[in-house]
Length: 112
Image (cartoon, rainbow, N blue to C red; front, side):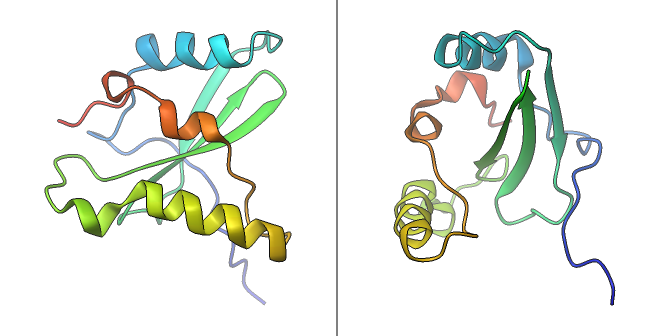
């Protein structure tokens, strides 16, 4: 049987995150994490970009609309957050969402 999991790899060119802004923001929410910030990208996430973040021992997933997206309803991250939050309660393999994800400033997630 083939491996059906999407494994993170190097970030695609042009889809990088602004580490100088994102890292201080994450450290302000997780002050006990002292290890380095490592970011990789899940390669199959083209509709909404999906990144694997490791901050010390903490593992996070960051999702964002594609760069330059003009169709807001097609990439409604607040809708995705609400659905996944409810789904996790009934189906434990679904990811547990963190409310800090909804508060990351857009300046840390460039839209160019």
